Image (cartoon, rainbow, N blue to C red):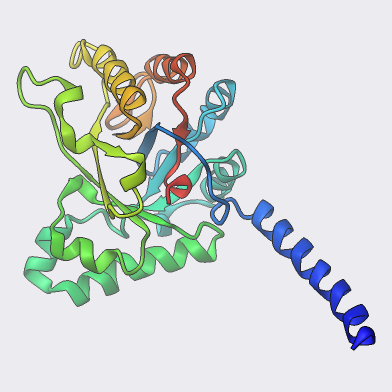
Amino acid sequence: MKSDMHFLIPLLCLFLITSISQAAENPTTAAKSFRSGVVLTFDDRYVDQWVQQIPLFKKYDAHATFFVDHFYLLKPAQIAGLKKLQDAGHAIGSHSVNHIKAVDYVRTKGMKAYLQNEIDPSVKRLTAAGFPPTAFAYPNSYRSEEIDTALLKTFRHLRGGTGLTAGQRMRDLKALFTPVDQIAGRGCLIGTGIDYAGTEKRPDYLTEIKDAMDHAKQRGEIVVFYAHNISDKGPGHHLSPKALEEILAHAQQIGLPTLTYDDLP
């Protein structure tokens, strides 16, 4: 019996060391402790512009999730760019194969076809390239509970979306906020768009965004935002680097962690 113990103890130590090492190397398996947070997300495939902002994110020790569609159209340099984002601590998620509205597709062709044509190939391509997605963002935020249920068999979390009505305060849009202790049980998290914040199109949005972040911090909640390109002039919908920096600086100032979808339980 004593000789058996001498044999088992080294094996047990080796197992523990290996397990700890693997958890450290794989951030998606390591739990991140937080009491509140802001979840910044960016959609589509503006990889070149996203990569240019890595130093800005690093300046504020901030991280985001980038939801990619049309992965099969990416050039090798763009895939390398996603790797740079991943190496900098950012998360890569799925935005479907062809950016088709899920509800319309399921209504006309059925759930099975949607999963086979828009979800499974996206997950396989991302995973094969080294970006196994834990989360999915609905194109155009078109979703249903039926589709949520189907997708949550593949993803830990989904992202839907909603907008503000005229005169509505962002802090009063309850769907944007999730108490930290309820995140694990809420499969689909709702965000709101912040493109054009601080421009003539949305002159008051930076104030609203900061106020919503304050609200989340005070109440022990997370708040979810989404944008697309990070650029002064596009192409496409965009958030300016200056506005992004103002958001990141405010998060740092109030001690609100910037979380990726991979950080969420």
